[in-house]
View (cartoon, rainbow over the protein chains, first blue to last red):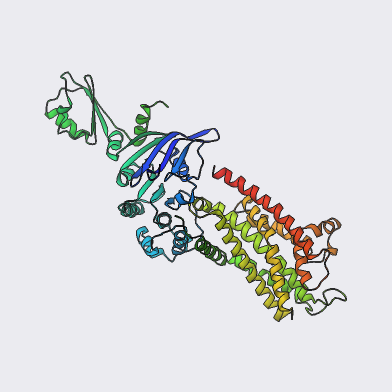
Length: 298
Length: 258
C-alpha cells in the first residue's frame, strides 16, 4: 500500500448497539485530495471519520491511515484533527495550547505562522475560556494544522457559527487548502462542500450515495428538473447552448437539469421546441438526498 | 517519524502545572488548607510533648500528620477532579486522536502532582519551622518528604479511579466524601481513641494509616507497624486502586472509543 492512499475505509461497517451508523463504506482518499463528506445529520459522516482516525473500531471491514493502522503513532504524527464537541483546558492560553500540540508532532509549523493562518493574532494571549464560538473553532483549526501534518480532518468545521464568522473562517480554511495538503472535511452544507472541496462524497444512512465533483453533485442536487415530452424527436445537440447542467433522454421523455429554469424555458419556447406535459421540479438538499438514495437499494 | 518524547513530556507537564496553578481552588486547597488546619491543631502549645512523656513536640507531630494529609489530598483531588472535568469537557477526545501517547499524558500528571505535593509540603515545613519551632535534621526533612512522595502512588491510583467513575460536577463531592472520612478514621486529625469502636478497629487498615505512620516514624515515634510493613500495606492499596482505576478507565473508554 505504501504511499498510495492517505486514508482508506475498506468495506467498513459500524454498529452502535442495534443502530447501524455505517453500513458498508469503501473510500480511498489520495494524497493531495480535498474531499468533502456531505450528508444530513446522523448520516454517518462523523462515524466514518472516527473510523479513519482510529477513534472507533469498525464492526467489520477495516480502516487505514497512510497504509498503517489508524492508531499507529507514525500515522497519527502525519495527521491533524478538528473534531466536533471536543474540549480544551479552559485556563490555558491560545499560544500555550498551540505550543503544546506542536510538541506532539515531529516537524511542526512555527507558532506565529499557525496563529496567522488561523486568524488568532488578537487572541493569542487569551485563555481558552475567553474565546467566542468562532474563535474556539479557529483554535481547533490551529491545533489541527500546527503539526504541519500531511492529512487533516475537519469535522463540521463551521457548525454553529454565525454567517459572518463562518465566511471569514472559510477564507482561513481556503488559505490553508492552497498549501496542497490532503484534507477531509464533513459538512451538511453543499455550498461549503462546493467552495472548499474538489471531490464530494455524499453519505446518507451510512452509505455512500454519490462520489463526484462538486459540479456534478450540484447538478443532481440544486438543479431544477425540467421534464417534458416532445412529439418531435430531440437529440443532445438540440440542447446545445442551453443553460443545462445535465440532460437525460428516455424515448420521447426529456429531463433537463438546470439552475436557471426560467431562462431555459424561455429559450426552448423561443426555439419553438414542441413541449408537452411540462413539469418543473425543485430539489432541495433533503429532496436531493432522497432522489440520490432512491436510485439505490437500501 | 514521531516527535521527541522528552519534549512532549516537558510541554505536557508545563500544561498540567499551569492548569493546576491557574485554578485558585486547586492551588488554595493544596497549599493553604494544610496550613490553616495546622494553625488549628498545631499552634496550641507547639513545643509541648505531643503525648505524655514523649520527646516529639505537638508542632512536629501535627506537621507530620498534615504533610501526609496534604500529599494524599493533592493526589486524590488533582487526579479525581482533574480527570473527571477533562472527561466532562471531552478533552480526552482530541487528545485521543492526537499523536500524544497516553503514557506521557499520565506521566505528566503524576509529575505535576508530585511537584505540587512537594511545594505544599515545603510551605508547610517552613511555616511549622518558624511558627511552631519544629526542628528536624536535614535527613529527617528529606526522609519525611521522600517517604510521602513514594507512598503517594496509592492515592494517585485512587484519584485516577475516582476521576473515571465520578461525573465532572459530582467529582469534588465524591472525592471529599471518600477522602475526608478516611483522613478522620486514620487518626490524622484526632487520635483514634476518640472514635467509635468499629472505626477504631478499622482504622489501622485505612490507606492513610500506613501513610501517616510513615511520616510519624521519621520523627522517632514508635508506630504499630514497621516502615517496611507500612510500605507493604500501601503497596497493596496501590495495586488494588490501580485495578480499580484500570477497570474504570476501560469502562469509560469502551463506551466512547470502540
